[in-house]
Length: 179
Image (tube, rainbow, N blue to C red; front, side):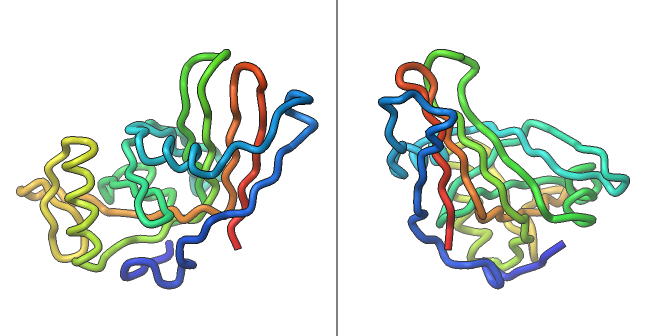
């Protein structure tokens, strides 16, 4: 697992380059603007986190996440399967979207999870969790806490690649790459 204080050694947030995959898009489709994708990432409350178990089997679970400063942030107990998986292999995928086949925008974020342990960053993230998700985390020494004995490890997943699937007409698949 990568441990970091804030975002080192992860790269700073940038606006990605975009490319429409014409093979999986309507003939009249254009690449979705990054602002639409970022809006979905900012307003979504639930994601599906896919990680890899030590024996190579996949593990998928729903999880709340907060998009901030170019990364998705998740919180999990250190004893949970997803935390053990990220400790073994920090590569993961987070997905969000709508349950509809004919409308909406589904977004897939591929990246590597890195622990966030820096207190000032955790304070900012705890405030965002409260504002966006109505979860009242307190900040401990290097993690969130529930005010009792339970500790929540915080991870930042900075995207290496994002795919956005526009549903309805025109349907589209846009790939966003980060330098």
